[in-house]
Length: 239
Image (tube, rainbow, N blue to C red; front, top):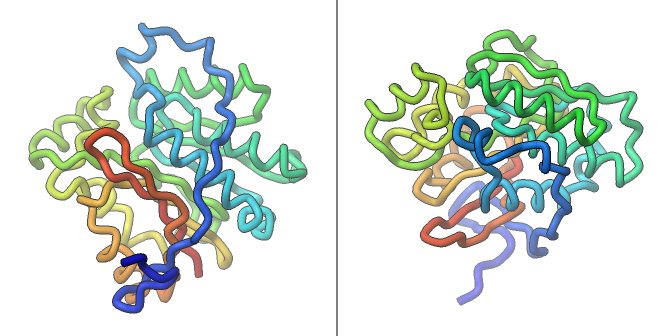
């Protein structure tokens, strides 16, 4: 039977409308050699951009001063977000777009992606949110390494800071995400929102209950899609 928009057994709301198909940023400056070292945009990237485009009214209401993507890879998502907001009429001069990554090749690729699309982007090489001032992030986006692997494989990927760090997620695909979760409430601005992409093996119902219990935050599923053998989702977490 069809589920209602609000699942009474959980803290998660589901939007009825499907995600739009969003235009991708220009990526012709990146070559196959780049994608040997940097995660190549794929179904998860496309769903996250589609979900952000579908949720643009919510984004505009935030009047975001700071938008940050963690683990930016090629820079496709944060550059795409800047374009989505620009097409919707948001003044670009009023928003700081930032991105972080551990992988030096990803830093270089994301700088080139932003430049090729005429987007102003600050890119910093660092681990998660180590240097971010609490309460400063209006829009936080994370497409974490979500593929369930052994803990050893995930930790090795993070320590080597290479392309494996983009997908190896440890048990339940949550080893990196679980490091971020306890700090989420303090890092977001008073009206800040968090967009998270994952797979259903990451246990989105448990995540929604965590956000509600720990921070009193509402989780809304803003995108779902099956891609090959993966069931992908995008959730918006807001106060």
